[in-house]
Structure formats: C-alpha cells, structure tokens
Image (cartoon, rainbow, N blue to C red):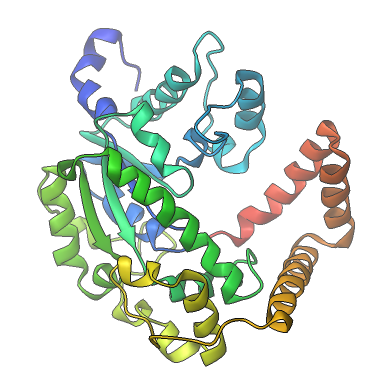
Length: 324
C-alpha cells in the first residue's frame, strides 16, 4: 500500500509506541509473536535484532559498517529494507520500522528482540515491552538442540546475558510500558495470557489469535511444552545451569531444583569448555559440510571481508532450512 505523508500521519502513534517482545532466545518469542500477529489490529512482523545488535557497549556502530551488516545479515536482509544513507543511526532504524509498517499498516507494530534490549528506549522512548520469561533450564536445554551450545552450562549463558540487559531495560522504562509474561503461562493458559496482553496494548482480545496452525508452521500452545527440564534433564545438567546462574534464578521468579550444589571441579570446567567447542564445530560441519565450515572459519580468522560475505551467504541459505 502506497502512503502519502498526509495519510500516513494517523499511523504515527504506531511508530512512536511500537511493542517489543523481549527475552532470551528459545523463550517462546516466536510463538508469542505469531499469536499476536494473528490479531487484525497488529503487525508483529518478526525478529528486529538488527536494530540494536551491532552496538558496541553504549555506542552505535559506524554507519558504513552498519550498512554492510544490513546487506549481509540473514535476518535483517530478509526484511528487504531500503537504506537511506543520509540518515544517522537512530533515524535509519526508525525508518526501517516505518517501511515495515507501510507495507502492512495496523494499529500496532511490533517485533521480537533478544540481544541489546536495553538500548531500545534510546530509539523509541515510548515503546512498550512484553517481558517474556522462561525457565532458564528449558532455555539452556533448547540452545543445545539449536547447536548454539554444547552443554547446559554454556546454554545458560543465552539466558543470563539477556536477563542482565532486561534489568537495565526495566530501570529505564516506566512500569506502565512493561508487562511480564511467562512462557509457562502462555502455553498452559493461552487465552487468559493473550487477553492480559491485549489489555496491556489497549486492544480487544480476538479468538483468531489462537488460530496459528493453519497459517504458520507452529502448533497451538500446549502445556506439555512447559517445564520440560523436569523430566528431560539429568541431575548433572540441572546442576550446571543452577551453578552458573545462582540467585538469578530466584530473582526471575523460578525455584532452584536444589538450594545448593558443589562447585565445579577443575576437570569439569575443562570438560565444559572443550566439549562445547567440539560440539558446536561438529554441529556446523554436519549442517554445512566440512568444506563450507572450513571456509567460514578461515574467512573469519583471516578477516577477509569478501570471503566472509560469500561464506555467510552459503551458510545463511542452509540455516534457513533449520529455523523454527
């Protein structure tokens, strides 16, 4: 739909007050996003990681490096965005959201973000946030299945780093702009949870939100997906997660399996480090093939940009087949 400046103005509030689903990877953000996107008043378009992921500390990336990222990153390229090189960083990222809204104008626009969520208020001060929580033991276990970590100790890192950024986000954003949602509630009682989200966003709950099976590759929410760690994780794996996270588990509202564990031995630490490296390498070789994996590693080590881009193009094409 083509929009002139004048008829675009009624949609300005959507761009000033976007809604972001924020939480760790493997926390159920895609499921929640798809459920929300079924609502006729929303455009929850996907992952918008590239809006903040390239920051260095509290500094935005240089513009040439960011333009290159937009043209080479798999997720960001999939959004098919036009780059206005006259804009500074915050203005360019806001323009990306405008482009996505213009393609599907709705009362609300939103996306999921998992990385530097603490930087989002710098770009959208009035944005609203759905703080999606999931038990860290389930997150750690799921990260192994994705090939991102070889064991639960390293998998827990993906939960840990986002919770640190979440604390910084919450310190900046008024409570009226935040809503906490637990994955366990979403899959156990989806209608009540979605109704609470709709109330927060000032829209009416629509039963169509639960009709995702015919429109997506995801199944309807089911309580069987909650707290899977209780029946599928060994005592050792649970211990590793709880040792790494310590009191952060209780701070997030979850209960430790055991109140205390023996510390990691030197042998365990060495094993965790080596096994993680070997597992991830084997996973990538199995997925990409040894030749492409070797190209990818060498290109990164030697920092040959053109070679890195060509290798990434090939790995991206394969990775898409594994996404869910």
